Length: 86
Image 1 (cartoon, rainbow, N blue to C red):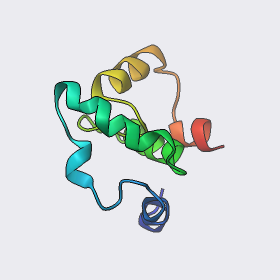
Image 2: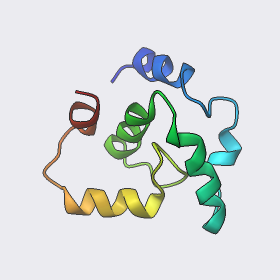
Image 3: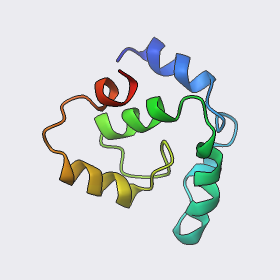
């Protein structure tokens, strides 16, 4: 994915002006996930985190723990962007 593609989807993210709120710990993660719920680029965001093995924050509505579990469950997937954003 090119830098331009990353920039393009991030412009449409509901969280684009609230980065600090998306790196909470513990029960505060639930609040961060609410922001993701109706985001128009949720799939692109999640794919970015999964493809780049980002280990912190809430991305695409998933916590670090949830993303790690998904990556362990599906090691066969080479491109999450292709799967999630088709």
